[in-house]
Image (cartoon, rainbow, N blue to C red; front, side):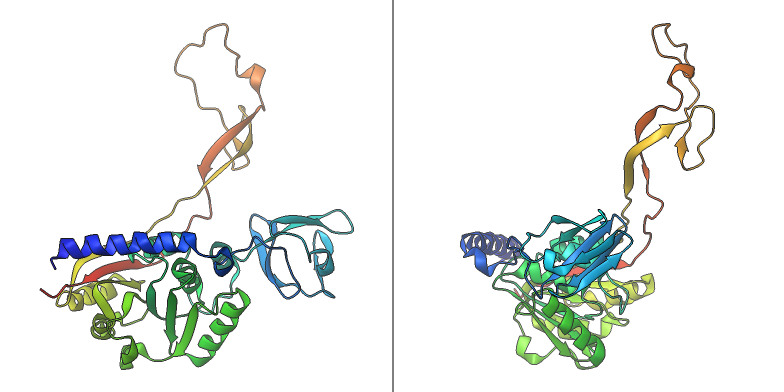
Length: 330
């Protein structure tokens, strides 16, 4: 079968897998449509820059600057509810989705954020039913999103050489309710490679290793024909050496750097008498005569306006994403 025919076949299989997922019993999917129960993990949203993961315990309380919140008041409420403290403050109780979990999890290592994660899942062609191998579990940020992408019948096998880090990841996956979709193993993939039991079975492989080129030969053996690989590396020298190793058994080798720029859209007070100091927005000089019917600057001083500007907290470089596809045997 030629490469183009195989790609068409893989696309058809992916579409059929998606249709099967849509027709399945909704109880088998990752869903937070039910109400909060004792023992659940919730994301407590205090404000746009303050969130925390909290395990619901009927006899416990949460105390913060907005007051004291009884966990017993949370039980029975749907995810997304707004709950009040005794002094009138409030918080929102959100579901631990992969997007929010990435923002609140404990950073045992450097993690991938939403921009990189979404790009990885798209380019690795991860769909429901896929078998995905990952080396470098770390804090489990990407693993959580991979688990949702392969649900309900796929599986993610993730490996870390650090035993305590792997144990912490298992606990996190159990807390977020994805332990049935993820298996965590302790193994030095750079030195030992992936277990032989996965040979020729993996749809996709993700590597987050200091020397990824050492794991590429094993990765090649794990992938199905036309399977995809992604390697995350913070330094361009790692990318160069990995690409040299990939050329023998892989094709369609590409490297990306994802730079995400966020904007704040909010109402600002226009102060026409002062330059922009960060809290107000100055009016730019007008280069053409205004008709007499227009409102003058003096008449509209200190008026509110909706302004969009780049966020001061925009993240810069995180790493390079190198993708490749295993060559098909002719």
